[in-house]
Image (cartoon, rainbow, N blue to C red; front, side, top):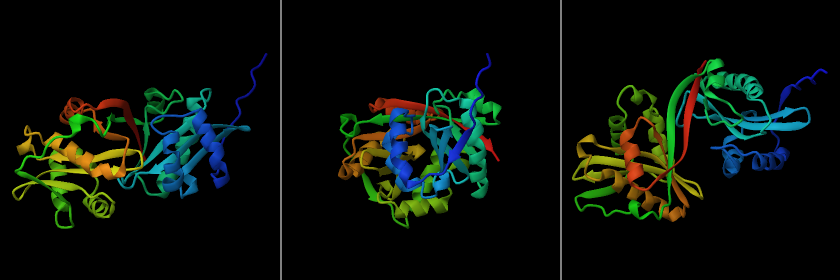
Length: 298
């Protein structure tokens, strides 16, 4: 007896009429960290270019849904493959064979230098699968989460310190603090200053700087959707560490997010950043996921 041949995988274009079918599929086969909770965000904000959607079919059956994220805000040289849903019985090898060429084409069209994927793609995609395709191991990022009502996040502000919203004049101070917290070679992965400045002045919630007299000693920057507040950056001046700056920054983050009415507060930290890890762990945050990025240079 011979086994039936494996049907080829095809990519179908995204159409608005596909949205409900995709949503049902993602509900049935969710994949972290991208799942149903992010579906509306993907459809409304990130896939205006329909070629970003990878709707994978095997015969008459949808087997996976992924998107190609243009990370131009935070990672200007990268295209990231994000998996929304994946059938349990679908082959990881077939997924990679179908998705990587599409990602390479998209990256070249946008003049990107690399493709990024994460280890927790589901579909039993293991680091070895990615290594065989030419990917190298990148950084591991831990996501921490806390309730905004966590009492450990609410600390008084010492009288000698003052928070101020960043302005066009003071945004460079934020960037200088950021560079102090990301020494070489990590500083080379920072958002270019021009993009940092543009976002700092345009996003609804501006960075907030902490001053002692006329000296900027820390800054915090947050963003929010209707449910989740995200700590984009916390940067502390090295000379002032040990004075509770981290907890004061977390408290300011909660204050800035209170008008939004978020249900949870999240932060992403490299596993090599021991200082930040200690801050979140002693402040009552819990680990919700740990992801290793894999990089394919073009």
